[in-house]
Length: 137
Image (cartoon, rainbow, N blue to C red; front, side):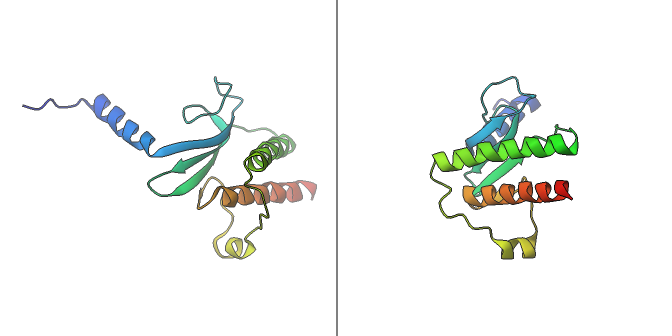
């Protein structure tokens, strides 16, 4: 007779299988994180995770940040600066062009799924630029 798994054991097994399909690429730890380094297991202000099964990159942001508009803009500009440093340090930033036709057809979505790290960067850069323009109005 086979041993039946408890609900907790099954959940742990499912999570481990899910986690094996993910690869942490880069991130900035959140101010709420107990860890000094970003990882798949830490709370991150911004991170990129590669989903091996879907062959896509996921850009996610910490949504627990609720400062004033000016503080939020400074926070996102700081994250963009860190992201730009990562892109340059890994030679991803050569000749990035914003796909305006894609934005006109599908919209600008943050925290989404992207085919490349460059696509995630371009989208985040455009969102920070838009926030900057709105703030200056």
